[in-house]
Length: 292
Image (cartoon, rainbow, N blue to C red):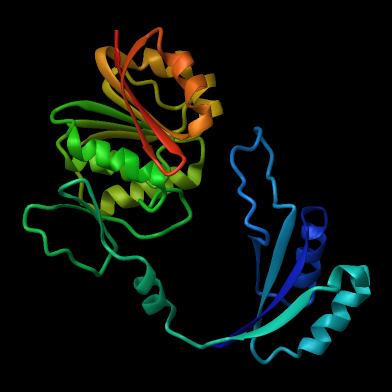
C-alpha cells in the first residue's frame, strides 16, 4: 500500500493537540520528530519531554484527499497552528528491504557481532547475536551500547554470574551469555523490555540458567559482574542497591552517562569500587570498577 504524510511544524505545547486532530482527520499513525536539532537527554521521572520545535507527522493512505484533511484540521485547531505544513507522497517500497538496507551486521571489538535475522556474517571465529530492531531499547547502534559490548568482548565473563540491570532488548545479557557466562539475571522496569529479552534469548537458542523480571520480582544473590546501561540519575539513585548486588572483587560496568555527568556517578560508587577504567565514545562515558 502507498502512503502520504502531512508534516506540521509546531511547538511542544501544541504537539498533542495537533496529533489528536490528525488522528481525527484519518491519520493511520503519528510521529513526533525534533525540528531544530535539539537533543533531549535525561527527563525527570514520569516526564515525557518534547522538543521546543517539534515536527508532527501524520501518516495517511495515499488516496486521501489533502484538502479534506486540512479542512478537518481547520475545524478543530487554531489556523495559526497550520501555518507551516507540508503534504508529501511516500514512495511505495518494500519496507522489509528498506529496513535491511539500514540495519546491517555490526562488529563490536574483535569478535562480537550483532546480526539481524535473515542476514549472515562471514566470520568463522565470530560470536553472533541475532537481534532485530524492536520496541525495547538496545540494538547496538547507540554509543553507550557499543561501549558496553566492546567492553564485554574484551572481558569475557567466562563461568560468571551476570546481571544486566535495565536490560532493554537483552543485548548485554545475551552478549554475556554468548561469551561464557553461566547464569544471567536480566532486570528492567518496563514489561515490554522483559518480553523483548525473553524473545531474544529464544531467538538465540540460549539454554543457560537465567532470571528475567521486574526489579521487585528478582532478588538475586550478589554476582561477579553487573552491567547497567541506563542513565546517570538512576545510576546515582541506585548506587547502594547495585553495590550490594556485586560480590567482593566483582566488577561493575556503568554506562548511559554523559561526559559532564561522569563525576557524579563516580562519586556515588568510588567508596565501594576501585574505578579502574573510564572510556568515552562521542559524549558518552563508560565507567568500570572492581568492588573493594
